Amino acid sequence: MSGELEALIIGPGAMGCLHAALMAEAGLEVALLDYRAERAARIAERGIIVEEDGEKRTVPIVCGVDPSTMGSAQYGIIFVKAYDTVEAVTRAVPALRDDASMLTLQNGIGNYERISEIIPPARVLAGTTTTGATLLGDGHVRVAGRGSVQFGSPKGNPRRVRATEALLARGGIEHETTIAVDDVLWAKAIVNAAINPLTALTGLRNGMLVEHDELRELMRAVVREAATVARACGIFVREDIGMMVESICGATAENRSSMLQDVTAGKRTEIDFINGEIARRAEEREREAPICRLLTSLIHGREQAGLTET
Ligand code: PAF
Image (cartoon, rainbow, N blue to C red):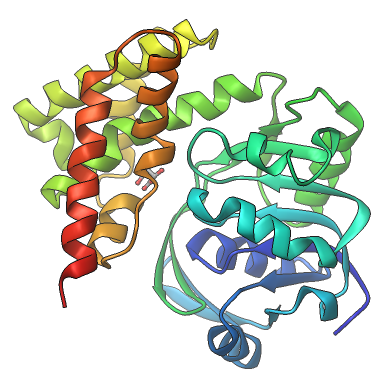
């Protein structure tokens, strides 16, 4: 296929597959960009399988690895792991119109800044999503719960925000906009910094972190430390962020966090862009974030073990 595309979804992980499927079901011209030819061919042939509310459906989708043959998209939405951002955006450029907007809904801090080195910053939008999904196999996703997207323009470009809002509305993606993009990204990063490494190191589901006294205390300490760094960076952090983290553990009690899924699969995690980045930002300001630093080292060790296990 080669023609006008409304949206190019970059990254066939759980969130990329789910959002591509939802937008295709809503009738948008959407394509999914992968980098592994075999997997892309399988997804293109079969479609995306979505399991939701105990039911299973297959959504036909355009999926490929060669952006120059995929059409010309008005919007890119990127879901790849934070460590793949630069490579993925660079690969996607031939499938984007010259004035295309690029929305990142990835985990971690620093993604939109890296994207803005490739795409003009005024065209870059950033945000978070509270939707939970698990990848069960290639192009096969289970929805844990539909949430909503919160996004905005780090450069303060209201025209792009309004146009992207219209796209998400037509695609059936719940959303709200914000003018405080960095505050939103940091709030999500603090949630991830507190929940993800502790679940990945213990093997526990999110809900158990609040059931276990020592882990709950450790989680609270991570939140305090990360919030202090965020405030030192000029970020507004709500006073009750600790309560918010605990209620997310409750609301996602049965979830295996994305980092637990990564270490279980022997994959690299996003720790360097969450706790590692928080510790790095602290050091930049001549402060310390010893718990985030320690958790980063432990996860690196866990990654090493996973990558060398057979
Ligand atoms: O990364 C994740 O798994 C999720 O962002 C969260 C909120 C921790 C729920 O599992």
